[in-house]
Length: 105
Image (tube, rainbow, N blue to C red; front, side):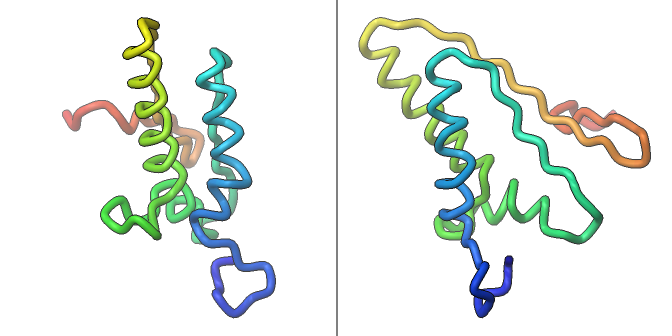
């Protein structure tokens, strides 16, 4: 729940700990991973995935996972490892696929 008074409330940190931390571990072990947010309009998918990138406490899964991934890869690089990162960021809405990383035409 996103209501702080609900017994089921989960802040952004709790969501990352429950979902993002394991994904981050698997990715740094070389596995492919996908984060999929699915649900009805207005249910908080964007807030959960993005959050507020400028507020440490309100950062969502993407900024937390990005920071963790590149921090870990920096450590691997210092140890002499090489790596390649490929990221896709797409939206499916009304049966239309949109690349959210492509520059606006």
